Figure 1 (cartoon, one colour):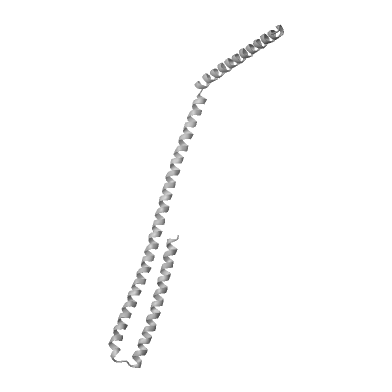
Figure 2 (cartoon, helix red, strand yellow):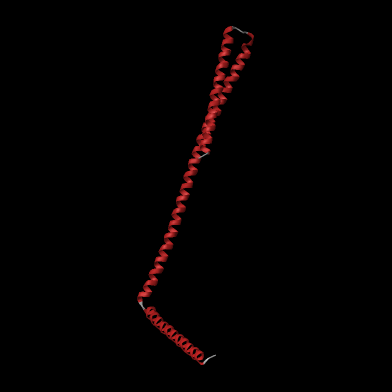
Length: 165
């Protein structure tokens, strides 16, 4: 290597050392300044107030969340109760309608048995009036069956409608 190259390397090393020294001194000055301010702030009532204020805000936020969760839970419980009450009322209504249909069906069956008994007892005397009466009875019975079938269909639709909600 030439002497000029050695001289350049020496200057380069000196400059690097000087820059490193300056950086080290700047870091040390910065550290001392931060330490000085940290000491001042630790003793400051302003910092203590800020910490207390932060803790108070955090605690208030926590209490608000707890309160909101309780309110939400109460509303959900109330809503569930109302849904249950409505469901029970609808089921009672459907059951009442079903009982009415059953009572009507029992009534029709009783009428049918009475007519059959009448028909049996009158079988010995087959007058034209009796035949006309039996035909009228058959027509009424058929009409009653159609009415009962229609009521059953309406009840089934009502149950499907209540169950689908």
